[in-house]
Length: 193
Image 1 (cartoon, one colour):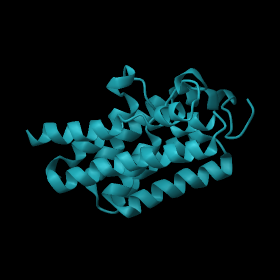
Image 2 (spheres, one colour):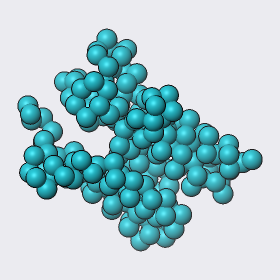
Image 3 (cartoon, one colour):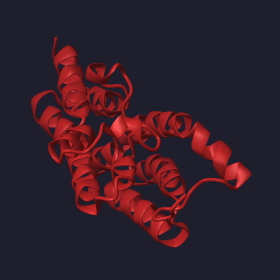
């Protein structure tokens, strides 16, 4: 039964739609009706409220971190399942008819929970590329792809496998962004369009 509990804890943490909750508490329109329709920090930023976007990012990161940290104490052999549960909970929350975010911030939390060097590499890739190219999807995809490689290099084989699966799903979640990148129409952070 431990594996079921680990999965449920991970999914439960991951499925909390912080972006949607924060924007509703702030009296805004339904977050799913603007921009990409996702519940993550990038779409919250499209509301024009940077503080809410930052809070969403930190809370989405925290739920990935909390899911892995808690299950590593309670059921260490099933930590990997809680990590995947948190990621899939964020991307496909049952409460929102399985339409959530793209999992980039939650993956950062998972990476930090496994080992700080993995989380640091993720954060440097994500924030560094976002600062340079100012395209959220490029930063998020790159960080997700780098994380399993760093996990493997630091000897975290379980993390490498989990983050490898997550990277594949992140790529799938960003397929429309990839099409826009190829077409040269992907918007930059802060652009009006």
